[in-house]
Length: 316
Ligand SMILES: Cc1cc2nc3c(=O)[nH]c(=O)nc-3n(C[C@H](O)[C@H](O)[C@H](O)COP(=O)(O)OP(=O)(O)OC[C@H]3O[C@@H](n4cnc5c(N)ncnc54)[C@H](O)[C@@H]3O)c2cc1C
Image 1 (tube, helix red, strand yellow):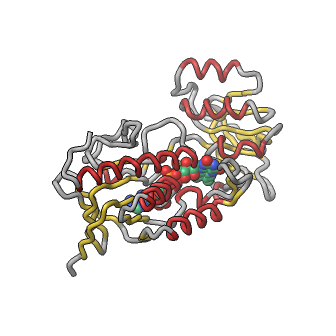
Image 2 (tube, helix red, strand yellow):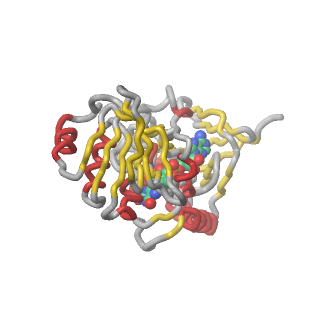
Image 3 (spheres, protein in one colour):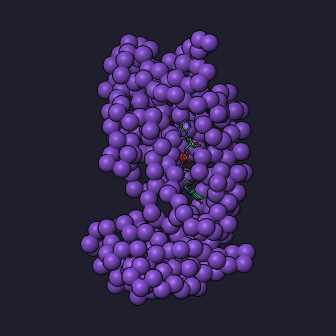
């Protein structure tokens, strides 16, 4: 069956905070806008039990915030197409195309806001304690562990930065490192080693986590002696990497060495008319507020680009 071709000003790929904010700005600028989402609206926040650092809400559940985003975008008249799988994108020709299972979109501009997913710890009780002691973002969830003992798993700079951040909140931070050294900047390793309430366990592997309702301990093993022990702690923060959702862009947009999209501060990629926003971008801080900021900037610059294309001008 031939696919229906849909011409539109803007296609936004990803309905997380970045994509949904871009949609709000695009609709208010009068752009015809389609948001394509492979899962459900909200992105990572839909999996977040409580959000306590989004301005305007002292505390809100991730699902509630996601629903508020959805109703805001729908109220402005944007089309949100969930579950229509994108097969490929074509950005090299004169006409940009986003080809889904059922349609061929021909937008003037595209905002890529597909986010990232954290790598799982792959321990047996990971799902059981997800949000009940197992976390992937200290900035998001550390406040609940004031004065407690927490663990950090990981071997890169991100893990040590999070350990240093947690050391200001928790009573003690235990860094669990499988190898005998870190794959991190020397200065940050030294800082972590010199912080009195950070203990580093080298050659130690996390085997599992346990507890009644909430996490109470980490089960670890010494990778040299194979001796196992339980370490009491209230939380484990995992920093073993995240994976940007950029498979569609491989080979057609400039990515950094970890696969994140390279943009300038206007959220422009190396291809005119293609913008990126949110966690999928190569940047330092990945939070809801940084994602919504990116989304707004991307939409405002996409609008400029679309207007210039309609007037037949080349955008600077
Ligand atoms: C458990 C958890 C708790 C968190 N808690 C907080 C918190 O309390 N405060 C805070 O500020 N931040 C928190 N964060 C981080 C925050 O959620 C992210 O920084 C934010 O969601 C990034 O928004 P985004 O729109 O860039 O990407 P995402 O939220 O990742 O959304 C991207 C969307 O794109 C979709 N997508 C991906 N690929 C495709 C494709 N090929 N086609 C169509 N759609 C696609 C995805 O399904 C997803 O819906 C948390 C993250 C997690 C995982």
